[in-house]
Image 1 (cartoon, rainbow, N blue to C red):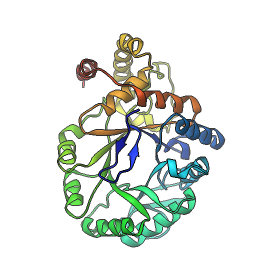
Image 2: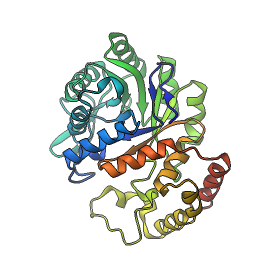
Image 3: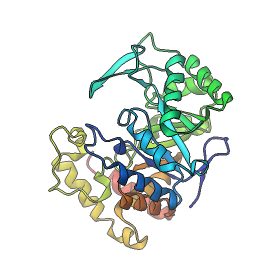
Image 4: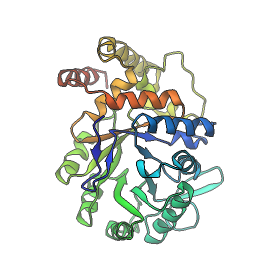
Length: 327
């Protein structure tokens, strides 16, 4: 497995990052088995996946606590990314959403960032965070200036509370602003075969400033895994129902496309999901593919994807076949 560095920090990570949003459970993902989630995380670590992405908002602390339980006794060999900016312990910041009795606000003020960091350290059971990512950017004319946010993050780095700085769900203009006021190591954005907007917006800016890119939702909520069929039914309130690609006509196109790659999955002895993940982190500028797992089988599948090395011709073929889909 080829390990990749976070900025110039010296921190080496697997190209596949284990995402733990689903592990938090809740309305987005439904019931989750904590013991199985812990086993999944440990299975991923055993197979060489040393990079884990979590956040306070994933299950309102539950995901971070599960990650902490899973890495107990092996913290030094794990790279933990968590986030700040979604705040429900006060009235600071702009209202974002309400869920399970929590009033979640977007705040990147120094005082809320520091409070969140202390809470995350306690939940995970560690005294440092490898990568702290601003989860969502503050909106509106009264938002905290990025210069102020970055000054706080750089201070946390100097104090040893965090080792690297990231930002997520930001505009190209905000990306430029972050790099003006400090060393931004990573951005985390939605990117997949079916959602390649980042190539026209953020990628060149990130490459120019040596900022790594973490791609999330690379399997598009499982649609690109090859495990969803036309007979798959989702609960009425499930998030997948809001995604255009899950509508019957578009879903049929994707399923047909995945079936057409049988020759490649046989060539590489891999699943469609592994092929898609490997294609993702093979793209120019894409440093990591974040892929979730809350079952041991899924974790092992992700680990195998991290070891795949696709030939250039196959990477090009996959892109061309995806681009041929009716948009």
